[in-house]
Amino acid sequence: MRKRQTHDATRLTQDAVRSTRQRTWPLVAVVAAFVLSRVGYYIAGVRFDASTLPWFWQYIDPALLKANLGQSLWYLHSQPPAFNLFLGLILNLFPGHETLALTLCYLLLGLVFAVVLFQLLRCFGVSDALSAALAAIYIASPACALYESWLFYTYPLTVVLLLAAFFWHRFVSRGRFLDALLMFVCAAMLAMTWSLFHLVWLLGLVLALVIAARKRGQSFGAAASNVPGAPWERALGDSPRFRVRTVLAAAAVPLLIVTLWYGKNLAQFGEFTGSSWFGINFSKMTNSMLTVPERRALYDNGTISAVSLVPPFSNPDKYYGAVPKPGATGIPVLDQELKPSSIPNFNNTLFIAVSRQYGRDAFKILKTRPAAYVRGLAESYLIYFLPASAYLFLAGNAGHISALDRFASIAFNGRLSYHSDHSLRQTQPARYYLQSLLNTGWFVILAYALVLILGLVLLLRRSGSSFFVPRSSFFFILFNVAWVTLVANAVEVGENNRFRFVTDPLVFAPIAALVVNWLRQRRVRDHHQ
Image (tube, rainbow, N blue to C red):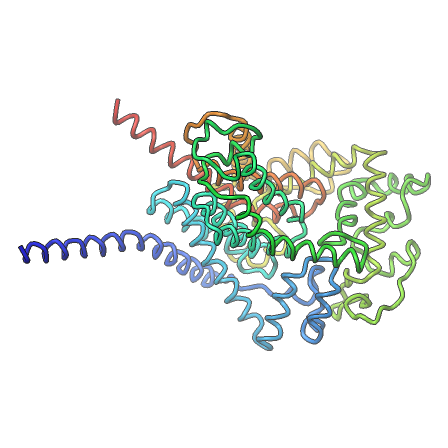
């Protein structure tokens, strides 16, 4: 009897070890694929590019970040503060070794990216082996490697948004406070890094959970087919029970931090927002779509001001005839006109008035010349669906892997052409837009269209039948993909494919789950037949 018990215990131990190995080897494979891919890119010549630190518009002068970090962040109005805080900490903690420290930080982010994408695919019903393979392919793509090797907030935002999606899934699957808190912390980090993730966006996440929970009697039920009411309630209908107070408690501090930052900007600069650049950016959607004679005619008839005769984001002295020169405040980050790199300091107080005037003029152009805005929309969406790697500031590293990048653009993005003549925009617009369409990634367009259309079906359907990803998790994906796709392209033109990179993993994961689950169901059906 004792021998039999010993044998059973040994067998259970062996089964446990085998089970642990089966669970861990796919994760080890993902980590190994990440490391090997980065070694390969390094051998190919890809290096971390921090050359833009002294002059990028979004960055505070590095000298101020070193010598006056707290004050500079407190009076920052052009950008939310999180990324400049990160830069300031790196500059102060690792003097003389900033590039190495930044390189390691971004590599760590890449590793987190790979692991979280693997876990999210598993959450969507993809097998461990396939999840590992898909995550490895995605993280080894040229676009991922290029953004990971460039100092800007795009790559960190992508990782944080993916983390938010993962914690959202865990929360709506388990109803645990900690998962909700981590999700809202990630959401607040996004809002405090990029102004596109506005306070309204953050409130949307909170309200989607709160309203649905209140309609369901303070909790979610399991039967999606019985969920009445608004579409988001049905979309969240497969979630377990959790209370409104859990959502509010988890969201309270992150929401308060973002709101207080907006309030700080309102008190200091009269702008309840994360960035004072909205007017300048929006002017590119209208003003910049006009010819010089068209713009001059609108100025001559009093429709627009002299500010709009100046190209957006020009040097401060170009505006002094159009708006009064502000007086000195005694605060370097507000008074500095040019950085030591000779690039304008767009956090100068001048640009608050300039941006407001650009915004007023842009809305007047929208009213009197709506075709200009339509051209801006067309331009923004054509750029949006370009391969994410086809971005100016990635060109240096992209040149080292041009063949691989070209292959990925054709095979994975569906790009049909590499020729575009921007001079045709004013002279032959039809030909220009045709060229631009051929340069876009058609596979990307189809993927985004599929996710958005299926998302609408998900919200509108009342059936409780299974979906290709958990319905409650897909709500987060749809909300964020729609937000970036619609809002970003409606208000700014120029860097739109960079914007899209942030949500690409949220499109990739459900599309992969859709294909894998469809093939699985087809095999099962064929087997039974």
